[in-house]
Length: 141
Image (cartoon, rainbow, N blue to C red):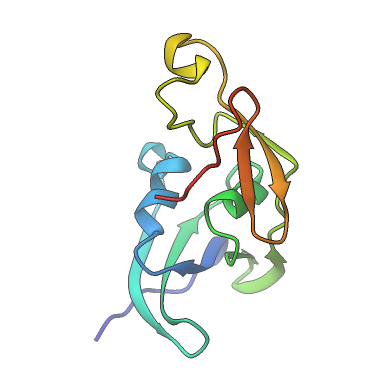
């Protein structure tokens, strides 16, 4: 039986598409944190079939809406005193910089290494982001 203790204070990132937790872990640089982080992969879900969950003890000083770029279905629960203080469905930001990278080998960001990777939301309904330099659509890994 899997037993992972509850959080007294922290963040639970829930409803991650099965197999996507490690990408979120990498994007948030959670390996650099000096706190407990639990990754639950392929958890049973009535809604999704399978899902991943990340539990982080403590607080993070980042804008969590950027996670919506990686997976639109993610929910973030803020835990305080062992209770859910806030439950957020993420909103897709209009523009993201250096969160995702352009994969087009002919894009100027492939040549100019110091140029920021900037994407603009072009289809909110489908969650499509396009590079502001070459219009290449971002495809999730």
